[in-house]
Length: 538
Ligand code: ADP
Image (cartoon, rainbow, N blue to C red; front, side, top):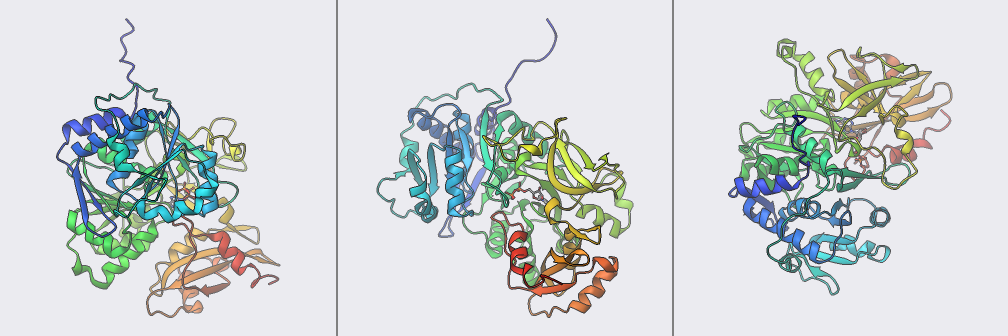
């Protein structure tokens, strides 16, 4: 006897089975297209996920084969999040906000066998159907509209699953899911998640100093379930047995606030764009909604400006800044104050909270510049590199992009950061978005965050434009706050309080809207194209 533990595979199945047994009454609420609320509980969720697994097996889905979804966040998506992987299949959530050619490319590249699609999203399927070859397409009757010929009703498919199904034993290193990065340059690249990675990621996310979730919580995943596994929230909610509220297709600020009030949501998570809208609604009239006193939010996907953290605090809502990537399942760092930091000055505390935070347990981190590993001194900039049990080892069936992994086994994130002595990471930029002026680097993210703290600015994106003398200079593209006038001189005065003169944007452009990627990040390539000519030759 060697005296160690059982070899018990870390798969998603025990998470599902336990939730069905221990939390049968816990509710899962979904906003349907007609705005009514669909309610059922974990016992229904468990039954339906099991039925789905049974139906998939009867339909001949083999181990490792992909089932794609084009779906909103809903009770059906949650059961698919478990039914597919626990039957041995691989859940491939398609990002339906991408261009139709990209969606088709991704579905073909992943060789998805079946597709499950919400009836309200059928127009997207219509656009791709001639470019893809799903063997069967199941339609979730979310709105109850008639199902077109040739497609099958998901409910009938579910009901066809033979009784008496039991889940297969699975290898913890087998894939449970797949996501593609949106690939603003080059082709989208796939990441396959193992059961083991997903389970460990869920445990980590649940820690009180990380996302922190308990069965007493009510969680609202605003982040789409197609975006990096909804940041792990769906699995986490099922693991701990917390009530879940799904927004369905209603993602506007008023609808989300209504849902938060109606279900007394305690934790919501999403990208900054969503929170900008919510903040605006609260600033207009906070008395419209009676939110839970402990309501808190996890915000990530792009930088959370410090001014937003302060503004939400005024409304009694704590925002927690997190950083992640599709390649990291996605959680990498998260900002919470360490013991003792409560005693720092208010400004210093906000400064820490606005950073992307400390690496979470088991995500090892380093900063690498041209000279090798850079010190954690809060000043030395370099590429953020990570390794850990839920960091991808490669891209799925792709030659392109494999150079992101170093010879000594780290993943290069492409984010340029500093790390301070306490271990807090601060993202300066994406490598490709840094502005090189007169041989020195200017951080577009720092300028954006500062500008968004000015009363006349709703949103700000800063890009590099070519400059004869300085190589590149910053241009700020601004969306004005409601009814405000944007004045370049006063914005530059405002920035001069914190930035050297040579950092100040050479020009400001006011636009109605800043173009965004499918996952809510500023689409800087589009801005650069739009403004390149206007500033050429300066
Ligand atoms: P997609 O491009 O498909 O949205 P990801 O969600 O994986 O892909 O994007 C990951 C990238 O998003 C990171 O490398 C980083 O540049 C950016 N990002 C994520 N969270 C933050 C954050 N809190 N602050 C700044 N940038 C972030």
